[in-house]
Image (cartoon, rainbow, N blue to C red):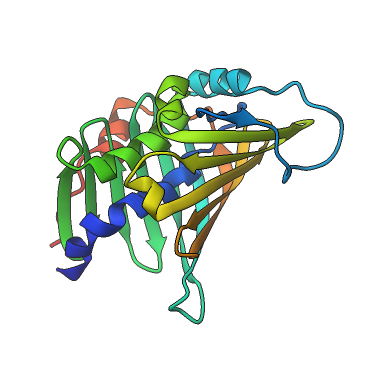
Length: 235
């Protein structure tokens, strides 16, 4: 099962691609040790948006769902790898990324573990014994949870906001993430994230675009069991 053997190496990047989950229809936030205004956001009237106000909006989001389209550009490939699917998040720490194309797979994260399933089977990775995966999980989930203190331990943050538009750059400050990821850039308007760019140290880049974002999603008990339950091994 080569797909599962590779999971231990690719899970961190996969989680950051989930960062699409950094969607919300309420303001967004990310915080780090360094907060400054930088270029790369739309021009227009000055904005009163701050890191604290964005974080507060994130904390108010109980659940969200969205569709994503992702392109990963790699130096060793002539054309980008393209994948599509959906993302679901239930506060405070349950996240699911289901890929529907080109192959079906499910990646589920909670506070204790990462679980993955595809046509080759399923696998669970405890977060406690894997500091690399733990860092990437926290980087994504803590943004959605609006946990500024936790994010400040992981990233330096640069924010530029104009009107309702904003662009936020997260630069890793901890190893081993720092050796893999150069930076992440999140772009959005109001509380809706429209795009996430993940730039790796080696130059590869992943761009995830989000659409049909619903940050007022509420999951019934049946839906929670179906969406956030453990992946079933393929037969």
